[in-house]
Length: 338
Image 1: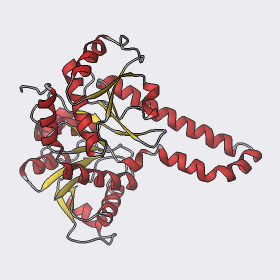
Image 2: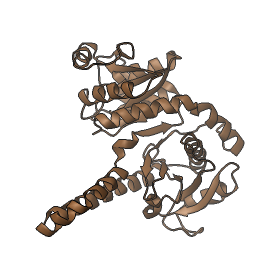
Image 3: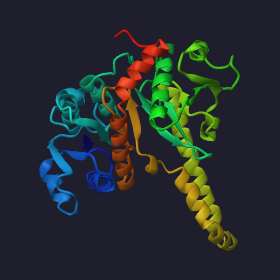
Image 4: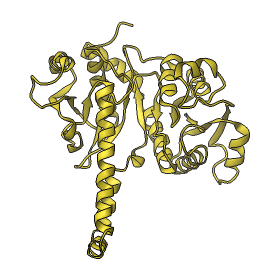
């Protein structure tokens, strides 16, 4: 099994990408990491680490598609880019099982769809991050940014893909909720009104009704379905809220002498709270619905995130998501004809 890693994607590449990859290789056996990028530069960086020499390979790619470039143009005009070379390898090499990148989200999503192709029966792939919750569970938010405008059939397919993904994480009969502006069945926009009864009647979907964005972190649902625009707004709002609260707590603790004294007693608990909501420990967002796992790590990802994202990719590859998603779509009656 080979896991491809975009060595020059993200704000902290290639140093943190390489450090995280080396850490992942040391943490788990059974796979080979393939760093995609400029071989001369990667050789220099890798020479600073001790690692099993047969566990890390390099796929030479001289170009990089930046976040400032139009994704479709970049994919078309830069065949020697890290993204294009990785997707070609994924498509042509049976041993290549997954791809990890913290680079241009648009380039990764466009490249995965055009170069790698959709899973049979999937109309639109979706971004699906793993979100930590108050009760210690994880919740999947699908879609969180790949498809700003969606049809009812897309959200039904997201529910199926999210259910299969949750199964891969060990959740049996995961609870599926529809993101809306209220929990009442009749609330929501026109899309929610159309999707709600469809989700209720779908075979294999444990639908529990509407959910407001403020309840996502409660852990009441295992999968929250949304169009990409609403899902992305909800995701960014949660990230901002958690960050603000953490800063506020830190300010309250260190803002006075009494706070500092109290902070000494709360230090361990505050550390655990911070770790509970730390996205670095959960890796990246799976671009689910394409023929092999593609994981988009945060642009500011560092060593720990890359390590966990690579290990995440290994577990997805072992589960064989593609065949299970196709079977689930057919069973639920929402498989796309194209």
